[in-house]
Image: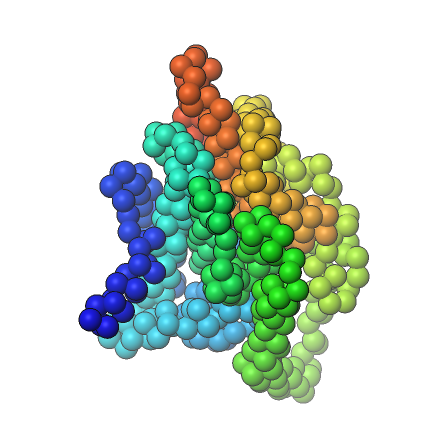
Length: 463
């Protein structure tokens, strides 16, 4: 009896992973699209990346070039390690990847091939597909949209260039999107409870913060915002501020410091000694030392060169960033300098080749603004806007990552289709031409973005 209760309890914990009947076809279509793109990435890099790894970083950073995304996950899964940038901004990422490293080591022992691309592709695909599912469920069960409209808007969001790319590149963004959309789904369901007693418990808050902040430190703020908008004034009680905010924040900072001292520093010392030996031998042989590379002009001018302020940027144009990168490259790729890295030849700002690219961008922004207007009285919409504002302060205000802001799109861009859900909701009970025109417009944009972005990604990886 106790065993049965335990099994039922475990089953209920993972019931949110069950794909419901009405979700099957949208999930199948999305999975097939992402499988196709994943196959292209594996095809493109397999000849190099399937060989045994050499050196600290392996073959990955030198040879992996997709729009500035890092290949550190390939490095860590091939030979588990944790590095300074991972510790400071993604404190739990290395530990969450450790099981994948064990699996990859086992496959290598059996086959003699580095199967890292396949090992990493599985959780990337899982997290991306379920992110689609959670967004679909928000439309259906939080906003109350019809199934067809929910499917259309979910597909629209996943047609964005850097949603598609984040699902197939070996970086943390697909993992982050999974936990952010799960957080929003939980918050939305609790806000919509008919008895008015919806709230996020402290245990659930801990778990969500553990994964959102652990994968990307700043995303922990999104968990706190979800709790704030769901629990209301209870968020500001002394008990919650101490246990729900201060305690997990201190834990994450202390854990980062421990991780850095225990795993990162010894590796840095070993690499520094090895480098010193090489430089000493070169000096003995009369070889002049290489000049250390300075800070790239494309990184912009920081507020300060110390601490976290070194990642700020106060000189890069905000207006060009918004047009060409934030609402541009994030949604539809540029034809010139296709998927190139700003640190390897791509200018910070690239113009589109055709006027209609800007027309599409303008339509998406107008639909986004219209969705905000029609949802302005909805608490869930203001949770979405607070998340959007937090990321805009980080990127456009502080300037973090502003020279390649599109890479961070998965942290906020889901807000666009979700806000548009309220525009669809306003037309749902009206049998008017406006309702069908709106559906037709979004269907056109979705079809165009899928064809346009997938064609350019395919062109880059094959041609």
